[in-house]
Length: 373
Length: 228
Image (tube, rainbow over all chains, first blue to last red; front, side, top):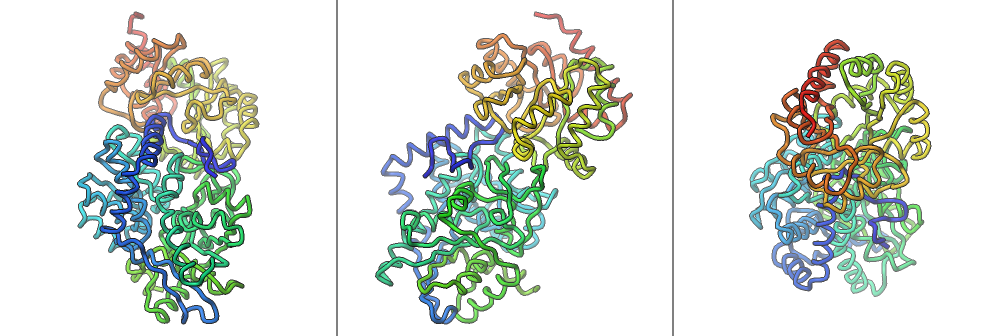
């Protein structure tokens, strides 16, 4: 699937200033060496078990989806409350193998920022997180958590003041401090080899869920559903089922941030992918009640899965996500994050009985936003 | 940065002694740029400076500056949307001498002839490849960082020049972080020329006369350096 040059069909690549290329080469070599080293995977497995809380359970949502056998992969129960920790742990171990003691990251909803701040606290690494001012307002509890964990949260006060600008500023920091710093990107976006690294570190979701679903039902799901912002929980979940041609893969985007549904082939944050742009290639603003989906780009592998037809991408509106958020809370006793609430909104109405949904995070961070609607 | 007054400003820079003029084609998310050029790009886009308007601006500039080389400086996103070959062809027919794409490192899209950038982090192998593929001269990024004024010329420049000279005879022009005549003199003692962006944009806000005088001050500083 992943070609040597970091391309997914015509997507992916490395559209970054020359300054970063040697660091990307070093990261690529370090990643391949780690992958070939059994102790790396063993260390990740042990951290997953003893620190993160893996494996996460699979929960049937019988009252939320009567008449279906709909299961939730409970990444909301992972330490720090979202799937983001899988990637942050893996990259922090990798950064230490590369000798980098300073970590920069971007964050939208704050879940990746919290995961990054957490692993930096755990390993004693310096941590700087860039976050848009609008997102800091929407996700105040996560800002406070990052501060408590010892990270410096740097507000980004220009442009959309959301994830897009936070990502640009994190990359600018990395360009400036590249010799000492690892850029711990939070989704399967960015220049090669990042999309591949993030996918492989999130693939644990799909591996576990596939085995758990088979154990519960004696067969594979008909449909697998996940929300897509940058697309990391979805690519991790999908990767467990890509070779099962009979399993439909459905990604759910926020209606006003549908990079795959409404985007153009374009270049953003170091890769060619499907991006919300105008006809001149200028990046357009995304809008979503969910800060984690409020991003005009998406991982290049998703663009390729869309074009190849292997995955389908649909949309859910703010109101639909809010309704699903409230219903899962009332009917199942599980408060989901607003991001996977988009996946829940579409999953329930699917013409399929056996459904697997990635519940990528928990909703504590979203209470203020939900209560204000 | 391209805008209504660009032709007049470019002519003033040439009158002040600029040998080459770079014209920014703004992109909404310029990763290689610090705050000055980022804000200039935001302003230009707010004033409608999309690709077609920038090409028109380039053509009008060409009419005012004779044979002075004009080099659009932009990002891959604009070429991706406009069409890579079409952008190159239309820019050259509008008067561009070459092209700089800030987020297109050497090795990507080798078929697009352009001025290549190298950085202090570039390996010798990449310096050699950039020198082979570059269009006329090499752009030395003097710092590991984004564009914008610095208090001193980067200590990394000397080493980068030395490594580049070892692999190529093409002219080496140093940019990023150069803003004063003192910087210009210090950089010109090492490299074959200097590139000034952010500070020139700030000065140009004061009009063509201010830009001409500023460029002249840099020109005099560079000319005072005795060729080695």
